[in-house]
Image 1: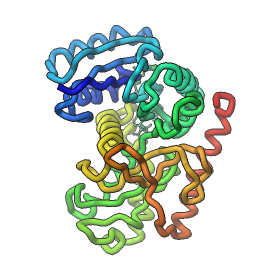
Image 2: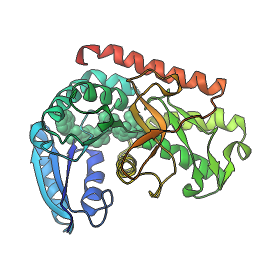
Image 3: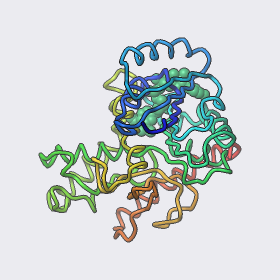
Image 4: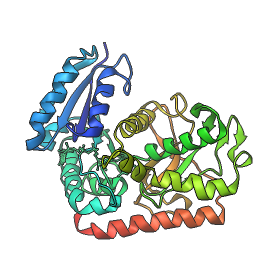
Length: 330
Ligand code: NAD
Ligand code: LMR
């Protein structure tokens, strides 16, 4: 029997967690031979609601689940943890932009960054989902100066998977036939879903779909999908697909992209090293591969058209503006 891995999830009584926790406990994310310990963080008033979720998890009798710890103290939740899903944050409602959440959510991530800095394993992998995810990742990382910036990533996999879904539907293929999707930049309406390097059943996507569809349908659909889901769900944001993307990103980060089931490249919001001229230190979504040891490498050498360059810079600019509004927390 392997030694259990310790996984912290924040916002554990919320919508995304209602899908995520069951899949973590089942073994889907960390392997069907990997025992897990769940360390669940909630705000104090939500702890009774969390108890109800735990009743249901227990009713599943998951063989790999060793222990569940619940707490309203981030230092207890993150004590010696291996993996962290930072989900707990306010979601936006209809008519809001994700960056409108900065004011209410930023403080959560500065506090949790400090707690991670103090008590998490030095090899911890922290995935930031709470919105606006990229700038929250920046806040968390900057408040955890003793941890390597590579310990943090912002979630781009929902956008990446949305892009794959749209292209697969258009080309009447299965999602696994689509490779090398890219989402550049911020998890926001300025993100740039890029099909220039994508393939469908080994053929260039650009040879199968026309430019008009890419510019007027594909890009805006992926950019605005979150808002469309909120409208369709009468004010509630995506939850099951977000949990799925979180598992997809964390699992790829752990086992590598060579053997995962999803894609050869994935998109991850990571600490920019300056690749493609993107300012160093911003959390920006890049196309990456991950080695079996968990080392994340930005796909280098891609040809960037003028159209793409402008889109990549626009989303970079938005990240700089978001950073300026929370400078005091860095
Ligand atoms: P939700 O309101 O259902 O749940 C959020 C939970 O977080 C609540 O139970 C709340 O009590 C808890 N919480 C608030 N402050 C906390 C804190 N300081 N510590 C611990 N827990 C805290 O929301 P949800 O639908 O689960 O969404 C959560 C976040 O994820 C939102 O910000 C949403 O916009 C974001 N989201 C991001 C993506 C993405 O692709 N990055 C996708 C979907 C949703
Ligand atoms: C999403 O993309 O579905 C989430 O970020 C929720 C939102 O506010 O759009």
